[in-house]
Amino acid sequence: MKDYILDASAALLRNYADLPFDADTNPDTARRVNERALVALERSGEGYAYLVTADMLADRREELVRNRLLSRDAHESVCGAAYLRMDDLVCVETSGADHLRIAAYDAEGDVRRCLEQCADLVRGMEDTGVMAYSERFGFLTREPCYTGSGMLVSMALHLPMSSQIQQAASALHISMITGGNLRVQDGGICLLENRVTLGRDGDAVLEQMQESARRLCALERSLRWKARERKDLNVADKAWRAYATARYALKISREEALKLWSSLVLGKAVTDMPCEEQTLDGLWRIAHMSPGKLKGDGSLHPDVARAMRIRALFGGGE
Image (cartoon, rainbow, N blue to C red; front, side, top):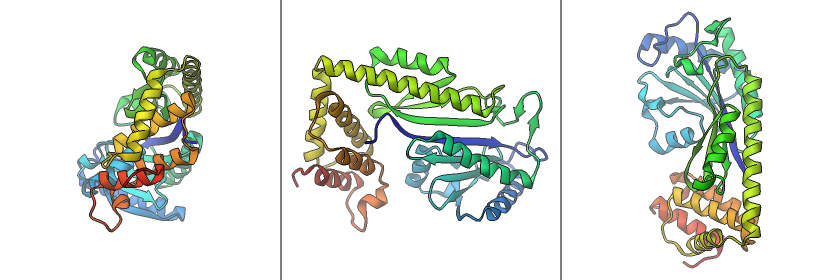
């Protein structure tokens, strides 16, 4: 069942040594970066779709940003482009803040697999030009905080007990002592990211992130066990309310669907709610469906279509 480590992503930032760091504003630099990236991707033998980040549909762009395949400010670069692999798991963003942002996503939370896929593509890119590198500082990036390994690693964790106000300080402390940053999002979902790349090689950053994730998940398991022992009424009440909403609500937004999923997963762990694991995994998938897939050929509002699917999943009323 989907829980604890939800997904993972990694990105490598690289810049060409012979090109200025102005690809996001200079069309000539952007063109040269794109030409080099295209050569490397064609040589890889894998299929990629070409996307102009400024012209992408908002829902599609948000989906890629949510999976950390695309930077949040990608659409602000008038010269920016992206090459998305056909399986939607690897993306090469060009001419943004850095010449190249090579990212990979793994729905099972295998961050090492993400990094390996990024590294394979980087090796192909190196044939198209020398990367900006300093013996003293490492790989050079537009923003100094990413100089060094130029590696961004993130893991989405389900920590509904740890992210509560009285426990948040402990969770933040665990992430900070291993060089990470923990961002609490809706529905008890937290994003664990590395903070420092300068002076650290990629393996060290990766090991620290994995260690931080292990400690955070151990804290969450301990808190859930304690809540189960004391028969936590607040957890039970929230879970049963979520169950009723899933069975009978007529409109459910994506954010509310994620909150329902989180409350029900926690309720199953703490109170033995009568929810099958496949039902909860189905709710997770529905929460992540794009508006287009939700509606199909119909004209229903996505929130109405989402609620219909969830009611059917939980055997609720029409």
